[in-house]
Image (cartoon, rainbow, N blue to C red; front, side, top):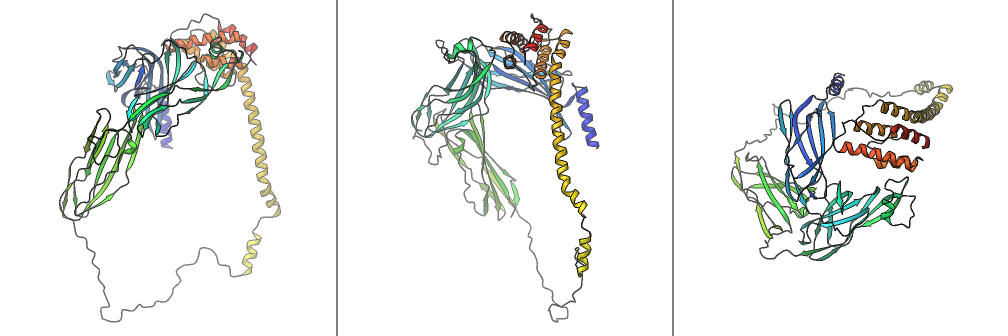
Length: 588
């Protein structure tokens, strides 16, 4: 009860005092990806932990080569086992001005006179590979590889980008299938905005680590995405896709049409690993790797054990990292543990760590030298074989304590017989269940059974309970439906009352429109976009003219919020009151 009261008091404290700190304050900086082109926008998130004071805006450093557009600010509060975790997240979009490799950050936040700094991130900006002579339309799939030439087992990054200016759903991907080719997804897909041939697209990007196990010239077949494309229903299906989409961008009604888009084929030349300088113990490991080891403890007693741990980690074909073996040691027993492999894919490829452990049990005191363990691999960056080895370790064994168990057999003091003396059997206790010794006991039990009327009630009770639950559910559903209908009727009145009061900012009016749509049409959507709002109105019978006017106003509100003017007083030119009344008349 006391813990519950403390938790409730803590929640009320953070609701009433949103700026209070809940612990050590820290700042983090994160990019949604590490590589972009000049026409891409990169999402940057600054997280401030330990405070909910959103007035402490971050200062972004080292961004002179980018156009910075602020986006959203969100606070969070989490209580786990009585521990409070609070913070604020600030989101920005970066537009590169030139190519190169840039160090982003740190971000600085000043709270109560003290300045806190975040980490730094590296962003590589490259030229766009788009062609200025072609227009692929509102929807296309692009494929690329990080290198057109690689060694056997070298990791290549295969990138797919779905460019779209239309709304899509139900996306599924089929990767090209070929012998000796292996794909491994690198992290989660990312979504961002980009420009292709002067047109703005939403881009869905997903990366794969591609490893080829045999030399040769490969033609990587196109990848294919199956999806549902939403296009205007009113246009003729024989018209071109581009004309159908751009003739009426915010159409009165949409229908989903199954569609498949394919990427372009790619060429990859895979060359064999060089034979010159190839170590005799080479296991096929290709990439860049490091090895670490430790022996704990370094001093033990004879008969006790020490643990030798080896970490082999790096980036490349990490599944080929070998299981190392410690050679037999004189007067030391070895017990190997099962190796564990942890793979951590990221945007640059597959990274992994193999952990190997051995228990060393020395039999005698003395000083023992633990031999170094060695691994060889091929590093494509320098085009040569490399060998790495663990550090040397010494194990000191000191004398242990003898723990012999003494056994003594003691006979009778008088030298008499050692036979077992029989004892009389004694009753210790009775069974907890009764033992029936007469038929009358059973008759007494029979008389304790319930009568006919009681038995009848027991049988019918579940039926009564089921009927009551059924009626309750029906009444509840009817009540919910009635409540939804009442809410829909009052939606326009609630909207017009707040709108006419005046003094609304851009963000407040956008939120007011979202509440109206949810209440009026019985929805439970969060961040409704202008396009989605147009679809909702059109699907409920609102005319194309009213739908387009509503979409235009809503788009103005979104643009203002996105560009950082969300808290400024709004100035929509068109009177919303009249438009809402028209929607109320036309909507079903």
